[in-house]
Length: 369
Image 1 (cartoon, rainbow, N blue to C red):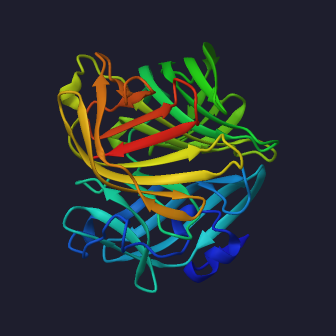
Image 2: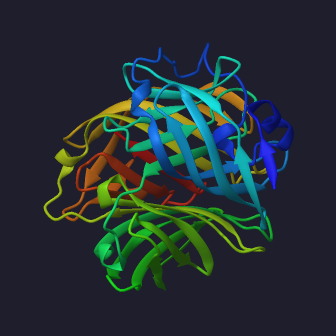
């Protein structure tokens, strides 16, 4: 077991991207404000993170576990498991400071300098972070508070999914999107489409068995033979999962959103942060992470207003402007002209999608309001 402090994470190649170190700010980087909303980030969170390692083409790691924030500017610790190219280990983190500004933009700090940036929801229940500063390991982290009163019956009916997977046995990365019908007793029948290094497969059928192991929403599931662990979050409207939890397995980050009857474009409206991952298919292969801010108009257009992309440790400003979207009648989320598909929660506070559906790089995006 490794014990990591912020200063040591870079030396360890930051297997948990959430706490890698580096600078964030300055030209071309999404701005960070003062800590007006620090109390929002308080309590224990389930988290999943995915990182593509700098200088090691097509290598990656996925981490999953819990962390605690004190509501006063300090992440007081975390315990998590990591799958780094099929090797499983357990890690812990020493206290790490954070700040949240008046726009709910959150950053984690090392020596007073932000090294992770993102957004926290207005109720403090969910957080999305991305490593977009120069020199950072590209990656994202998703955090959510657990609930209560959950059981296998909490997963029933239609859900949408999006996932990003790396192949621990070779140079292959995959984005997956589709839907699943849960039966409320531990079974799930899914329909998937894959982008496997640019090659499209499906749609085809699959199984997504699950087991809610605690009333707080902790659960396990299996996707394509990859065992995953995570939790039901966002008031029962979303699930975040990471793994594989067994040695030798591929690494995966999976998000599911609960379907909602009568959904329209108006469900996706207002300001959002967007964090993303891209597995480059053009040699030499590399990972990139992104962080954007923008607003959806509730009528089919999402306007990016600022953003940064970290390509294998090199951070650059991203093009901004309008991107089309649509929300289907059951909460199907279609982004960028049917190039990415996923789902949006019934509250409209969280959305996820993966692609590219027309070929090209496997990509994954997570939206938080």
